[in-house]
Length: 100
Image (tube, rainbow, N blue to C red):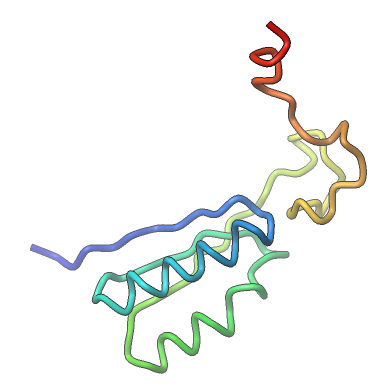
């Protein structure tokens, strides 16, 4: 049987990215190959830590995917919650639960 490989895809907000990175490092330190999936403008948040983890002899990687901001009705290059300029840009899915 092959090595277990876990993928982590955090919500693109600092409050989610940092704990996800910590969890991925913990998995890697226990012998599980760990890969973080992120977008081009967020990759820098992970690169140094992943490189350091690999230098310690653990297996950790990054996969970068294009985030379709324009297709999601967001400004181009809006790939992180820090870049949201209006509450109208935040999906309100599920808000009807509280209005009932």
